[in-house]
Every structure is written in C-alpha cells, then in structure tokens.
Image 1 (cartoon, rainbow, N blue to C red):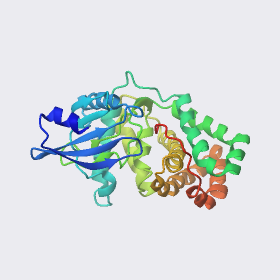
Image 2 (tube, rainbow, N blue to C red):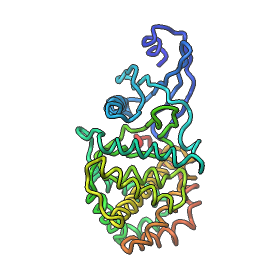
Image 3 (spheres, one colour):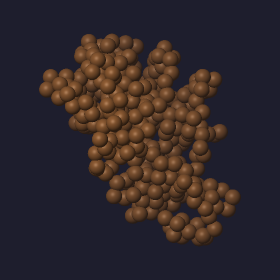
Image 4 (spheres, rainbow, N blue to C red):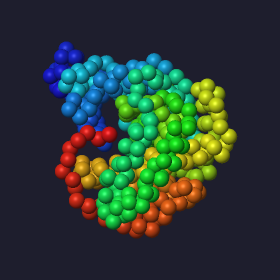
Length: 335
C-alpha cells in the first residue's frame, strides 16, 4: 500500500493515519501530503470490488450526487485514492436544531439519485434478491433462538411475511437505489452537502427503500409524526422530479412502512451476523432500535400481526441470548 502511494505521488514524503473501518472488509486511511489530505481505501480483492466503487462514484458524480472523486486506482490490489470528506459523519452531528436542514439536503440528493442516477448495468432488486435478504433474518438472527426459528419456519410465518413484503416492493416504481442510505454513510460538508459514501452495492429497486433507510435509520430515531411528514413531503417532490406516478397518501405510506419492515428484518440479520461471524459485537446495540421500528409498524397491518407477536413475546424478552451466542468461525464477504 505504501509503495503504491509513493508511486502515485512520486514521493515518499507522506503519512498514513487510520481513518475508519466499516462492516465490510474495507479499511480507510487518511493520507497527509504537501499540506493536503486524501483518503486511501484498502479493499482486499478477495472480498471486495473496489472497481465497482470507482465506477459508480464517477457515474453518480456525473449526475450531481457528491461522491468522492477518484484520484488514482489499483484494482488488482484493491487500492483507491479518493477525495477527503472529513470526519463530520451525519450520525455525529445531527440534532433537533439542524435535522431539518441536514435531512433536507439528504432528501434533495436522494431525489437527484432517483431521478437521474444510473440504472444500466445495475443488479435488479427483484423477488429473489429480496428473499435472500429476508433469509438473513432467519439464518443469523432467529438462529440464536433455535426454538423460535423452527417455529417460524415450520408454521409458514416467514414465508407469508416474505410474500407480503415482496409484493409490496415489486409494485413500487423502480429507481436507482443506493441500498444503504443513512446517517453513517452521509458526511456533512460546507459545500455540496452531503457527501455520499458506501454506494458500491447500488441496485435498481423500489422508490421507498432509500427513503425509509434514511428516515427510519437503524442508528438514530426521530419522532414518528416528523418521519411521516418528511416522507410524504418527499413523495410529492420526488414524483414530480423523477417522472413517476405519485400514489395516494395511504398507499404510499403502506409502501414506506412495509419496505421498512423488510429492511429492518434484513438489518437484524446482518447485525447478528456481524456479531456471530465477524466478531463485531458493537452492532448488537443497534438491534433493539431496529426491532422497535418493526414492532411499531407490524401491528398496523393484519398480515404482519403474527410476526409482531412472535417478536414481542418470544424474541424481545430473550435478546440477551443473542449477545452470548457462539461465534461462527466463517469469514465470507459481508453482503
């Protein structure tokens, strides 16, 4: 890595400092050189595709989404040299005084992404894709409660829930979908706010997915009525900008609610996998918040009432069982 940086810069007069890491195998280093900074991404090729990040960053920047500029790349070894967005991640700076302004910027950027973002060459978030995501909930989260996992599978509960959530997703307009659009992947900037990160898994998918990822964020919670106000306001603006038909309020909120249930079930599975497989146990603290979103929404829809009862009665009282579940010795790529 240091040899490659020296070749790119034509100098070995630089310093690398650890900047951050994430839920994947990628790590990030801040490069200090000649009075300026840049970010070096180290993405092990066996697990990550830095080329996809570089290609999508250029495509997103071309339509007005502020993703990092790619200064240099070594796809064979998994290195990218990127512009530096600093340290002000949304999650660290959001508060009641600035949330309308910062979310306003994030929603405006999302509207651009959905109206003008690339779709050619992106995977499609189809029924099989959605079911694979939902399988994470059973295979990693419920697996910590074997009796509950067996009951949910043999009773057909998970299958019926999956059918409802797949149908809900597929009836929505399809747009360019970031797939992880939330407060840990948005950077507060003085100009062209926000900086957008972690977009390499973009797909073509339902219009409410990124919206609910942002507004019902697994890492920070806002008042429910405020979330609905943001969501319905966005629907009208984005429909006009993106050229898709805007449904009535009730139908849109159903799309939004059920899309959130799908995402939050997936997220619980991923958080459990990060703990059990990868030893990243700090993600367990995000599970109660994520489950709370499901428990707030599911009882409102008769087809999800049994899921709500299962979680409330048999899982939530035993969450500590997940924290002591045995780590599985596997090291595949994080999806």
